[in-house]
Length: 426
Figure 1 (cartoon, helix red, strand yellow):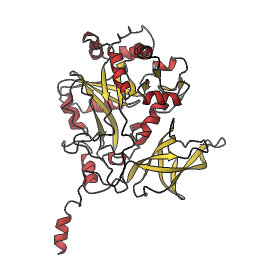
Figure 2 (figure 1 turned 180 degrees about the horizontal axis):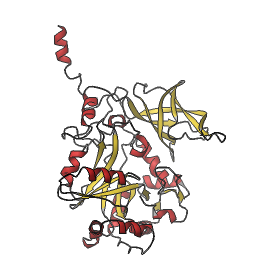
Figure 3 (figure 1 turned 135 degrees about the horizontal axis):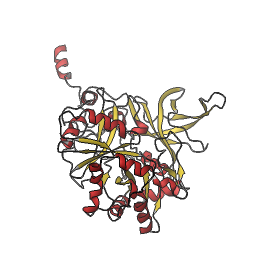
Figure 4 (figure 1 turned 135 degrees about the vertical axis):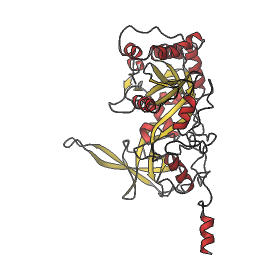
C-alpha cells in the first residue's frame, strides 16, 4: 500500500521499518487515550491494508470456488464476509475481508499482499468473465463500536478531494486502469460521497457454516464485545474524511496502529500478518468461526479443513497471554514461551493495553494445559553480534481461545468409522 497521508499530521509517530504497520501511524502521542477513545467509538485510525478489486459477472461464483467461504450471497450494504485462501495443504496464504457493491468485489488484505493476491487471482481467471486489479488508490480506515457507523456516515457525506497533480497518490491513480478507477468515483454520482464500502468484522461470532474450537472452555469469549469495521475510501479523500470526523464531535480523535492492535489482541482476533506463520492452518487460530464454510464444496485446502475437523486435532492453539507488567519490559513477537524450561510456543502479537497492562497472543503446542503458568522471554539485540539474545523472562497466564482438547463444536463425538472397527474386533 501507499504510505498513509495521516503520517503527515501533527503528532503522528511512524511504526518501525519492517513492521506490518509501517505504512500507517503507530500513535499520535498518547496510545493509552487513543485506545480508550477507539474502544468507546470516538476514534478512527488508518489501517495498513491493500485493496484488490474484482469486476465482471462471474466474480462472486469464481471467488467462492477459490476460497473457504460462500461469497455468492454478498449484496451491497450487507457488511461483507471474511474468507481465506489456502494452499493445497490447508495453510493460510491470504485472509480476505470481502464486500461487494453490485459491480465490484472489493478484497482487503494485509499491506504488501495486494500484488501477490492480484497476480494469483489473475492466473486463475481462465475463461471466466472477471477482471482483477490492485487498487493502491483505495485505503482503509478503522473504527470500533458505534464509531463504525459514524465513520461510514462521515465518509458518505464527505465529497472526495480533487486528485493532486503530482506525488505518489497521483502516480498510483494514473497506474490504475481508467475504467476501474471510475468505479470508485461513481460513488459520488450515487450520493455516497467518499464511501466506497463498509466491511463489518464478524469476529468473534460463528457465521453460518462455521464452527468454534472452544469445546471444554467454560468461559465467555474475550472478544465478546468486539465490534470492528473497515471503511474504504479513495486515498485522495482520507484527509477530508478524517477532518470531517474530527470536527463532528470535540471528543473525536485519531488513533494509531498500537491502539488498534491492543484492542484486537484483547479480543483474541487473529491477523494474517501476525498470527499466521508459514505452516498455520485455520483450526489453530479458531478462524473457522468467521472465515470457513464447512459445507460449501471444493476449494484448495478443503481436505485439510475436513480431515483436521473430523479425524484429527490442530497441532497448535492460539491463546491470549496476560503478562506480568512489573518489570516494565515487553516481549517481542517471536519470543519463546516456556513451560518450566521447555519451549512450548511463541508470541505472535504483543501490546500494552490501557486497562489490562501488557498482553499478547501466542501459538502454543495444543497439549499445553490451559491452567499452566508460563513464562515469556524478554530479548534484546546484542550490539556485538547483531543477534537477538534472551535477557530475562516475564510470567504469563493463559486465556485460551482454542481448547487443548482440540475439538470444535462441529467435530464428531467419535472418529468416523470407529463403529466399524469396533464391529471387526467383536
